[in-house]
Image (tube, rainbow, N blue to C red):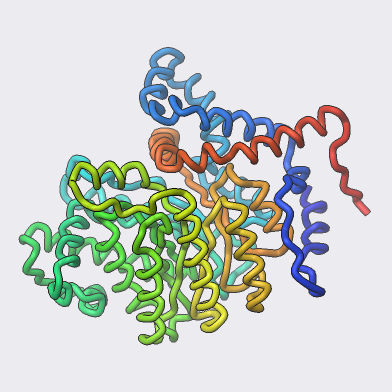
Length: 461
C-alpha cells in the first residue's frame, strides 16, 4: 500500500500545460481496503437514517442496557466510532494518522470537549483547567505526529473555545459587544495586553465572578496559543452559535493581535466563518481589511455552517430576524463569494494569509482548485482543504493524490467522550449526511467492481 501511494503521489500534480479539473468519481477508492469501504458504506447509510441521528443518545443508552456495555461498545467501535474516530490511545491515533499520510492526507486533531449553550454551569474553574490540559496534550500530539520537523508550521489542530470558558460568559460578552459604542472597553488590543501582562482586568458589564472567570479564560487561551506557537502548531478556532460568535471572534482578534504579527511567521490563530449566515461575507471582508491594515497575518477556515435548525428555532422563539441564508442555493452563493474573496487575499498577501476550504461540496472544491490555478497559488501553499474523517473520501483522496494539502478533522478519545460529541455533530450536519448519497453510490460501485473481479489494478512497476 505505502509503495503504491508513493508511486501515485510522485506521478500526481496539476498539469503545467493548462487547467485540468479533478475527477471525484471515486477512482481513488482503490487505495482503500474492502473492509474499510464496506464499513464506510454501512455507516454512511446508517447515519442517513433520521431516527438514528435524532434519537442517537437514547438508542446508545438502550443498547447498553440490552446488550451490556462491553458488547455495545464493541459494536460501536466496529461501526460509527471506527469510521469517524481515530482511537483512544496515542498509539491508535498515530496508526490512523499514518494510514492517512500514506494516502496523501494530513491530520487535523479535535478534542471532543465543549460546553453546550444553556447547559448546567460548571463548578469553579476545575473543569476548564482539565480541558486546558487536554488541549495542551493535543498540541503535543499534533506536533509529534509529523514524520519530520516542520518549520513551515503545517501542523494544524482545532480549538473549541467553549471548552476553556463558559458559554454564559460568551453570551454576556456578545450582548456587550453588540451595544453601539460600548465595545471599546473590550477592544482586542486591551485584551491582548491583559493576556500578555497577566494584570487584573476591570470590565463594567461583568460582575466580580464573571470578571474573574474571564481573566482565567484569557490565561488559558494564552497558554494554549503560546504552547502551540512554540510547537509550531496552528490553531483553528471553531465557530459556534450566533449568540456566542461575536465573543469568540473578539477573543480570536485579541489572540491574533498578539500572535499573528508579521514577526511571528504567519497566522497561528485562525477564525472560522460560516457561509450560511447572512452577514458572513461583510464580516470576512472587514476582518481581512483590518488584518491587512494592522500588518497582521490572517487565517480563515471557511465552512458552510452546522447550526442551521437551531439558529432558525432560536430566532423564531425570540422573535428576532433569522440570521441564516434562506436556502441552500443562497448559502452556496455566499460560500462562493467568500471563497473568491479569500483566494484573492491569498494571491495578494501570500504567506501572510492562509485559508482552509472546509467543504464536502464538489463544486466548491472545483471552484477553489480552478481559481488557485488561475491566480498562481501552488497546490501545497497557503490554501488547504478540509473534510471530516470517515466522510467525503472520494474528494479528499482525489485532492491528496493531485498534490493538494488536505486535512481530515479527527476527533479522538474514549467512547464515553466521543459518542455524544459525534451525535451532536451528526444532528448539526444532517444535510451533509443526507448529501452523502453520491459517496454511497461510488462506494457501492467500487465494491461491486471488486466482487465481480473487475477492480482497478495498479502495476507495481
